[in-house]
Length: 113
Image 1: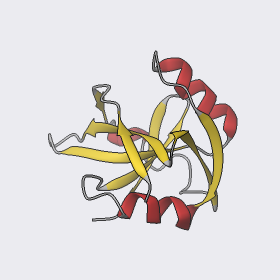
Image 2: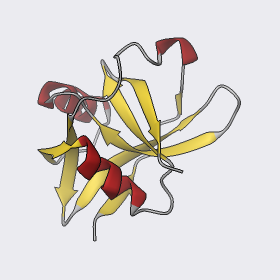
Image 3: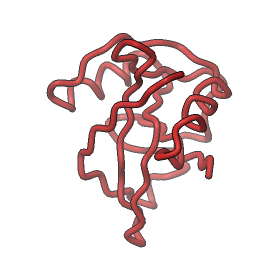
Image 4: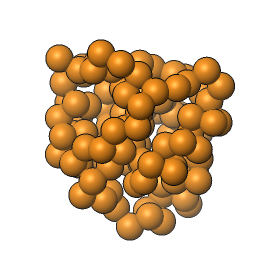
């Protein structure tokens, strides 16, 4: 069973930045930190709701950028289909969504609960 590492970073979701990417790609990249563990993050919606989500990226370069922004995060960048990533997130009761990061910002959110 996959596990998720939670790395709080105090991200506040800027509603005007959402939707600018055009949706989730069919293939996403995750950061595997070993032993079926993947990077995730939490963010605060504009209404104050806390969201815990699996960190996904449209390409390996975005995942590399993300690792550079979060000191101490390292791992192997792995490719998964969107559905595989969704199933990983669904298997974790604490997670409510998938985040798609681009340019160090959350640009799309896919809710699973």
